[in-house]
Length: 524
Image (tube, rainbow, N blue to C red):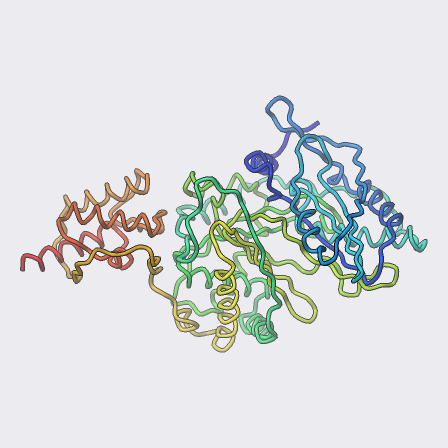
């Protein structure tokens, strides 16, 4: 029995909040050209579970306190009968079925016979598994299956237990790095002008969109990587930052990025070794795309260098809306992972193809997962159906590719010139403005009005630390709340102002200046 870490405690609490959801499930599938023999695969599964301590780790409560235990886990491969044309639904149900944190195993496996080729599916809870573990699990299963099916010798020492890399102790340098990087960050500024507000009681219902990136996009990535002298991973992430900026996020961007800082020490190990880091990028629109890509590369390098830091320790530097537990402290995720198996992988001398399954949930507004391969790359977008429609993500995926192609045509052009960046997010259609227009003009500042507007900002945003220069949207304001603010500001000031003025002047000082000019014009 062991106490859990803060990372484990967070995942355990999430499961208590949504016990009927598979939000923390990580599924992976393998399709074989032909049939899979159950007995060799079961023996292979037994050996892999014995090889990896994480797969034998279970959790249960001692009173109200979650504890971690090492258990004798038996993972019997389920043979799942698949009706005609029912494979996708059967896999989806298997992937989404939640695990019970009551001491039961946190991994399961199923075999789905199909005339088009059998499918093997493994699902594990994020407490004991991460996306990088999928590659280790599948490769180990193929190695063990070849041994039991065709008497292929196992590599020397292969049956021994694989030790995990262990947790890295935080350093003073790492604490200083994260404190400096995230000080003053405002994740509320990451709200986009597409999608819906979160429901009061989210269910984490999610969906997935997957597509192959066009050859023109892949060529653009390779060109940008060479010309900017950076990695393809950094180019993809830089384009993701730019995509968010184009769709309403503030220039001060915060994105969640899972990174395994253990490197080669976990290459053969299964477990939850990756931390999700909050990568903050303060974008200057005068930069070129090449400059953004290089700065993103440098940020990734610094994160790897200072990754010895528990996630909960650095997240305290981020301020979010406590009511938005689903998306705090970041709303958007980016990930970059190669395929789970080599492209020449085989089982009983028949080709196999791995693919990622969806667990039916999404903790974030959306996550872009780029999966590079030898001959191209694919993009998998997991998104919250409570916040976004599929059409939103189809639009974003198309825009993402267009950004990359446009950037490759002129990597040294200003970001605003790659594809024009909007100044502010437009208001949703359902928010209408008061009918009377006034034109902004300069006027002397009214200190009473300014203090009243700061107080209004604080009341609506439920804050007590705002200033005359606090940005309404960066500090957490939404479009519907903006309409309320404009109405109340108009009553305070005695004039009517269009909602569009708040997007143009989103601080108390800016709006006060506009109101003063409007008063002068009205009495003019």
